[in-house]
Image (cartoon, rainbow, N blue to C red; front, side, top):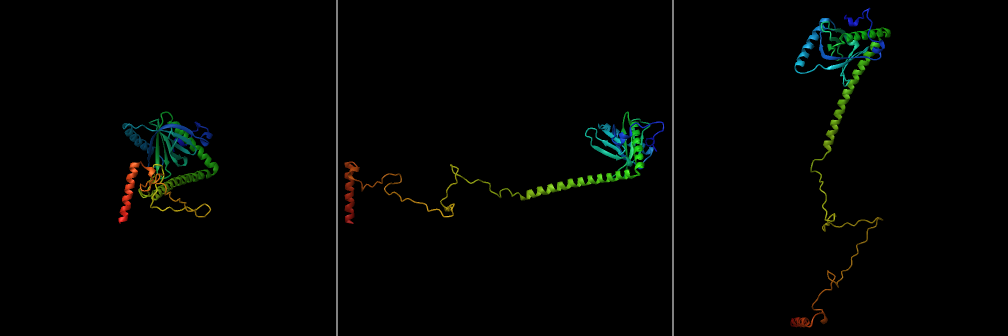
Length: 289
């Protein structure tokens, strides 16, 4: 087993038990990536993984891509890999799934650990680059293992089983949240389809306003009969009162003109004489008839 899992008798741990049990120890490093390995442990296994990921990173570097920086949070519960700016958890490697941890003796900046993936059950080797803290990070993970094992013995194995149950519940919660989000989206799509189905086609409802006259009134149509409106007390309204036409006046309120009924004083003498002559001729004509 690698020395990260066995504390040397002449060397004490670097951190207090409370720091790893109640909190976590943070480190910054560059993340070369992870790759699947065939065995859960072994120096040669991690060496092959390091060579593979270094080669892939060299190709990406030649293409202008930089090695991403990450933050490691180490505790007795595992190793979390986070984005240092957003603090989003990229990988959560539970301690009981980590089977091997080592720092590279040929390259002091490189350290690795092998973790069994919770979904695929594949063994993945994680490789990191830390210029000054590679060995310290490896020892901190070893100290977390030592404290977790002591806690396991004190609890009689119940603590590890509880963590497994909690991990299973957390995974189920994530699945339910994903399913809930999908159902919400389907419901929203159905609501949109129903709204589209209830909208009448264009042109089926006339929105043209009724024409009015210059006084903003509806024009009167003589063809449309007038319907009497009942009075508020329930009795029919009285018929409209019509006044008899004044036969003594014309349309403009003037006296009607009749040249045969006019008096002699209404016209000058010359005109009156001509009218009298016309009246006599009229009388004679009616006599001969």
